[in-house]
Length: 314
Image 1: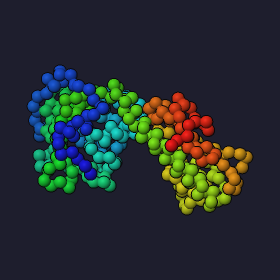
Image 2: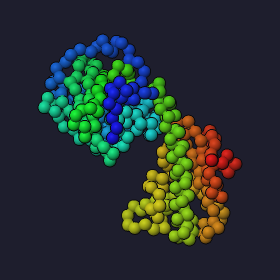
Image 3: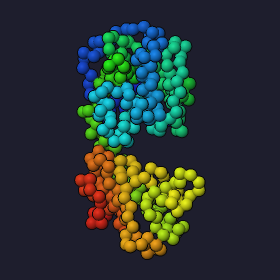
Image 4: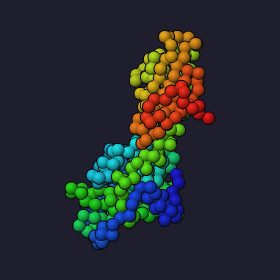
């Protein structure tokens, strides 16, 4: 796992392409509060921030959305799934979903540990400075294997009380403003989705040929290539592609498989596969097509299905 050692650099990483400046009036509301009281309150800002970080660790989109203001929550729901995950990663600086565990330090303040296959992070939540409906807390992040603290990063997080519940307001002195940047976040993920769609087309084509060699015919549908719900693999569930791809949807793209000709029997039978953005302009721009000759093609078709006349991919 990689945590930036320089606090300023790490904070910039957390804030890039997410945020706009916080109005100075919010800062003026900050005043000291009793940290022990904040730590002990199950409905206080420390507890809310603890739950935000555990949701970000496990990349639970529904749970994380509970702690967004109404305005940000609406924009979060419109973002592509990959963009929502990328947003949550900023809170824990870990790329993979992890398993969170919550403990308390001797002062009673919560500490969240996030374990992933690639490593673990420990996140210590400091006391809250609260005035009226705004609270600011310091958060210390470090690599769980770093006993010296050399990798430690400190970031300030702000919360605001909305309808009696604490919601994420800011990182440092900048305001979370997803409505102004949700399209930019989706666009940043769209390029990744397009590359993933090309790889998925290749995976499907390879799985179809494996299926043909084993069962001497083409599969009836993508679901025939997926894993069985129960029991061993068979012609109806050959376990040749992942379950999500077998449903025809993955990484913001829908996939269509068609047998070309009257029959799927034997080696001469042919097939076509298309990958189309589920939400044009947000989950992807280009549509992709694998023609009956096995050539991959791609073009911006404004969300329409790709065709055999589209430009060949390099």
